[in-house]
Image (cartoon, helix red, strand yellow):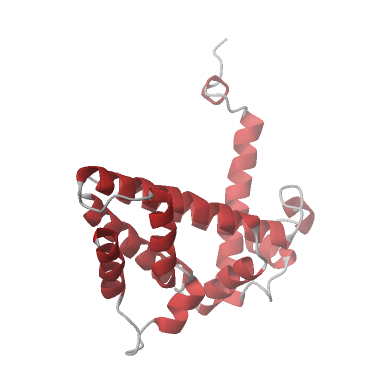
Length: 207
């Protein structure tokens, strides 16, 4: 008797089915959050969108808060994967930093600010001081640190502490990544353009 491929790969069929159900719930939750907003949405609304019972939702998530956290975690993981892709480009350290910073800025606009309802969901996650947000920032900082360390090794950037430089670069460009700050600054003439801010931060690494 042949062993199912799912089991060969280390995924029992019931685990695969669970992952598929979780993915379906998250997709439905995101659609409903986008339509009504996080605050006005209930677990019953999500269940209705899926055509299943509320009790069935609770088999996979204990609360609306947990669904919200899972959605935000998925969004942050997509952002981190984008950062890693920029860091792996066959470019100079300077160009990789530019790609990284602009990539995160565009991701924030396209993913987190594409509607008022999504922005509300992100803001709530930040205001709850959720530990995953801090972990995400730490992971991005490691990506930036490695790029800067490469630049120091090749002479593009002046020698120094790459960890400190990464923290400073992140702080200097945080207005491009933080959804609330991006929302407040976008389109305003008395704010530095993203390209100007990134150029300023990179020149500081060379000074």
